[in-house]
View 1 (cartoon, helix red, strand yellow):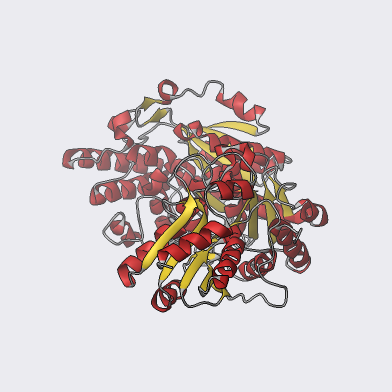
View 2 (tube, rainbow over the protein chains, first blue to last red):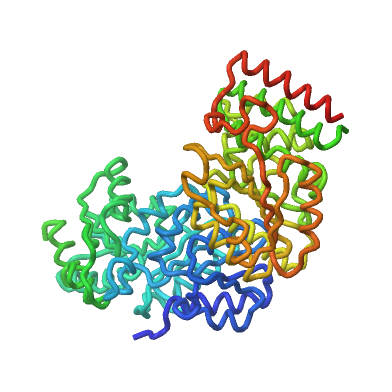
Length: 311
Length: 273
């Protein structure tokens, strides 16, 4: 099992690139440790800004830096970044179109036992609903690396969510089929499709392996790009398979399932199921325990997918 | 060119015309902040309307964004866009919307939601510090705006990073939409609050271009900490019946009021020349 956190990969990419690119600035809100950015702060102190525990301030400061040509990366817990500073993200980043990348760390239910204050289970709803804000949930460290490298080459706002814990590799360094703003096909299949994002891509692949043993060919789409959504990948799956199951570490309202169901309802109606977190404070526990509690396990995903297509 | 005071009264006429034309706006706060903006754009700031993106230009954020008519009128008179364009303010499909927008030449940041400008300005000033750039950053806030907690997050960061290239101005007119600021949410010991946050504080008569000019000159000499100028102003300044009257926060003058105001502004402009 991989032991390298996605957040560590973000640090590694930024540390490396910042030697050449002096416009890169990383900002933390007393979060350099939890964001694995202590190394960046140490290696590039002149390109690092500490704001203290002030999530509104950090986003606006990043926007000011960006308006003067800096490439600002804000790393702060997703739970705070996506709600407490939502207005700063809306006004100073998205509306002002500043080159600010908001990195939500310890996303979803990563802080499992710490309670709802520390869960970010509605950050797709908040961030994706802001015009001009892109939203990405990378699934593993290899994809995270490619995503951050891609984000360094553009000038537009984005929100990225990564979890707190290391996650299993979905790809390998040499085989990470990354094309910016195009979903990655994690597994080919023709009977049913699982569309997953972030940490649920790995359970989706495991579910597909279970289904394969039952003679069901299951496609797995890694929708790391939640906004802009890869509409064509969804519609192609709708046309080519018998049903779609969407998996996300997010509540149903305003999440990836909402977005995909809207799309297929208007463009290509097909059987659909959403597996996600409930509209209530999530129970305490480590991420795998919380996932299991709400049926986000490979076994249950396989059962639900088979049931959806009447198998 | 007219002297600064006369220019400010001319700009007030443009603001009045704009507000009457678009039947909207915040004329009381526009008039209280006019001398501050006029002093900055016509005397203090190193800016060139022909090179609005010069990396070394001074920057200003109107954090009290609802006074946008004043900013539009100042920018138009300073040559950032044609005076004619003031007729488009708040019109259907116009880029000249009711709050500052970077779509308009010369405007550095979108604003409108109060309490953002200072933190954005901290970012601009930090960038200047990192790049050892010569520019200064000016943030103009309202006094009612100081109830926003984010202002104080920005204030903390500015002094922490010793941003002496940052100058905040508080348009201290003492009135907000619901009445006197001290009744709505008091700012007791305002000077001491900013001092406690590590700022150098200057008090100045905010409707005197001369006093504001002196204050801005003094602010440039302060090193190792940011400066805030508490500009003591009169809401609605320049038109006697609008002065210190909370309803003129966003009232639109009728025909009679328009003529009275026009005559008064012309007289004051004439007296200043």
